[in-house]
Length: 156
Picture (cartoon, rainbow, N blue to C red):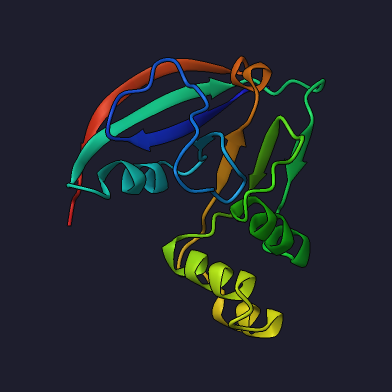
């Protein structure tokens, strides 16, 4: 059974691809989407108040290696720290909570040894739910079909 995923960015993305960036992301390099339309809209408008929301039909493929984190756990924290330190993994798709900008700072402080694991968990309380699903291989990208795109603007 398929589901709708959203990707927010500065451009409309009809053909998703994996791009190497200058910094490592939560689940390493990949093409990132979310189930949460509002979250994707925030991603799209975060730089100058206008962007694009791309919508995809995601059809899961049981032959792919998928890692799911249903919540923030010790395993999730260790996985993100490893990815952000530049260590690749061998999953096609990874899904779980997002380390937003505030959480990212806490993850970085934990990775740098500036705060303890216990301090991280005390600080890491989300203000709103987050979700991300990242596609890390060409085979994983074949599970996405572009549905439509639209321009979005910051409502604030």
